[in-house]
Amino acid sequence: MSSFKQPALSVVDGSGGDAPAPSPSFSAGDLAHALGLGTNLLVGRFRVDLMSGSWWWSDEIYTMHGWKRHEVEPCLEALRSRKHPDDRSRIVRAAAEAMREGRPFACSHRIVDRKGRTRSVVVIGQGLRGGPDQAPELVGYVVDATPVQKEALTRRSEGVVTRAFVSQAVIEQAKGVVMAVRGVDDETAGHLLLEAANRVSIPLRLAADQVMTRLHAESEEPGITQAALTRALDGVEPVGRPRGHDPLLTRRPRKVAG
Image: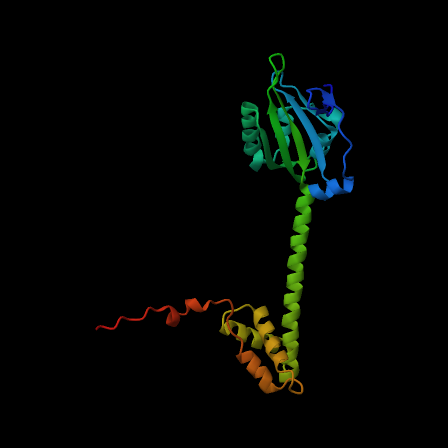
């Protein structure tokens, strides 16, 4: 099928005629900053003649589905075959409403490409109602948002790993202090910290952090003594419990009979 030509852009002047677009007063960098352009995404265009049912796709749509142009004829069934089974109904409803009402639509869903890889795409389109001699069309874009999703997952994973590393470092530091002061092995030191944490029902990391904080607060003493370590272990306390939950504070006072 022959490609649809993109219409040339023009600016309508006040007299009703077409005038050439004025040169922009901003740079490409200004525009990129204003639009928040970041990760480069694969964007494809599509157009559907709703009267004849004929389709046209740009090369990018073939690429994101894992096809080459000569391997498949653009059609509804070809797209449907690549939709993720859990997402098929959503795009169908959105597109049908756009064709019926001629208004813009946008929705996200997943596709499974030819190699079995799941991709997240965003479809943006609009139903166009032409004149009396023009067939209605559905036109729009398909954006492969998979790189953005992967970046978000990577940042989240890195954050989880970082927090886990910091958490373990605090625990190991506290265990090292207990081993040095009490003269016990690694397992016994860990057990002592765990006992302190379980006593007030808080995570081991928070207990270790409290122990180290209390020991640093007594740093004026020469070294860490047995007594200081005992006070730190015994001083581990619950966290995040609002005082308003204390029944002695929330209990209503009894009325005194006059």
